[in-house]
Structures are given as structure tokens and as C-alpha cells.
Length: 303
Image 1 (spheres, rainbow, N blue to C red):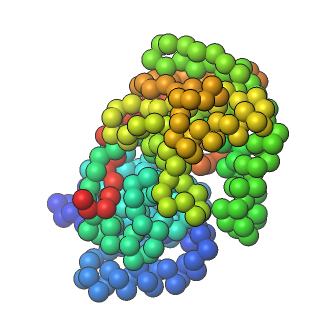
Image 2: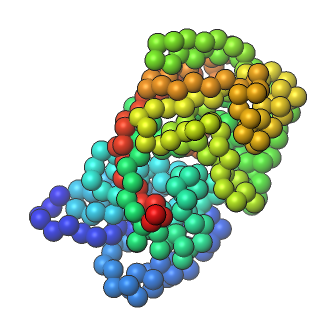
């Protein structure tokens, strides 16, 4: 920290995120902050990785709260710089998925999310780590990594429907692997299309009033990771597994396997692609996931 002054608010805005016009969003946010007489600094991202650099610089300069106007990728970059620090992450969810914001109960509206960012409570949450890279919500291999890779032009044109298109295509052409899951030294093997390692349990989608829990009784501050294995080989298997998740009858499906622990090793034959917080990594299994308990400060709705 430079000097002894604790600066208040640093804003990181990804102008490419979401359908809202970047300049309009900036004017609205600045007007709201000026009306509250809150001092702030504002920066735009210019390239992948820039948000992490800006956040690291903000922490070094003594800013106590970093407000992210962007999607899941931008949020992950900023969170990566804030892990282990005293700085607090606040969210303006203007991206396509907004998984962390949805799990934390941050409203989708600009006025609602800004109100939470400025007046909400601070909560410490766990952070998952995959081979040294952090994640805040869910990382995985296989099916979900296929879902999160729609072409950028399709994503820009269709928004969340691009993910629906990718999910439908993957569900109707499943490609199972032999999966080996080792949780805190205990190994299990099965055939399936994917493995989810969750720090937070909820997955969100348009028209849903709240996220659907992928795992039962998951908590983001229990020092543990939750694992869901899709032991799926056919389209009917997949539909059965998803029905069990949506109806919260997790244990009734033979196509879902659940584990919980501090270290998770995922292997697959043939190897499966990997995603972290909705971002395709360009890598494949195997990977090792661990947890850093209560390593990130986030702003949540008061009460």
C-alpha cells in the first residue's frame, strides 16, 4: 500500500461485457456515485488479463473495495488478484452468465447491484484452486467445458441462448470417458461425460428466479469442495440426471455421483477439456483441485 491512506473504491469495467452500452453504463454508475459523494477511480479493460493487472495495482495502491462491471471472466480475473488480501470484491453483473453474483444473491438490476456493492455486508468465501489457478464458483471437465465455448460472434448475437445451443448439441451427442475421481485419497471409477468441482452450488440461467443447485447442501465457506460426476453415457441418461438436479432429488439418480473433500484429482480416458468459472482453459485432464478456506472477501446483500 502506498502511504497510509486507505482509498475507497476502484471500478474495473469491461466495455465488451453484456448488451448494455459501455458509455451509458459508465455515466449511470458515475452519476450514482457522485450523488452519494463517494470518491472513486475508474478504469476500462483493454485486453484479456488486463482486469487482473488493474486489480493488483488497485490493491497495491491501497483501495479497499474493487467494483467489477463485467461478466464471469472479468470477475475471475479480479478475484484472482484479490485472493488472500484485505480488499473486498463487489459486483455489477453485466455479463452473460454472472454466476458468482447469482450465487451471492446480488440483484441483476444496475440500481440493485450498485446498492449492494456500496451498502452490502462483507462475507469471506473459499476459493478453489486448479493447478495454481483460482476459481470462485465451479470448475469442471467434459460436458460443461463444451457448453462454455460458443463462438464469440454467436454469444454476442444470441447472449445466453448461445450456451443453450451448445448445451443441447453436447447433450444429444454424449461422448463418455472412463473417469477416475480421487477425493482426499479415496478413488472411484466410472464411465461418464463430465465432472464438476464446485465451490458454490448454484447454476443460473435466464427465466430462473434463483440458481439451481448442482450439489446438495453446498456452502462457499465450509473449507470443502463439492464434486458432482455425470455418470452419463446416453442422451436419456443425461435427461434423467438433469431432472434429478432440477427436482433436487440428487441421491435418487444412478447417473449422479457426489463427493466432498479438500483435494480432488480428476483423470479421464480419453482426456476431457477443462473450464474454470465458465472460461475454457485450452487444457485437458488430469487436474488437481484444492481449496483455500475463506480467502476472498465479497460483498453480499445486507442481512
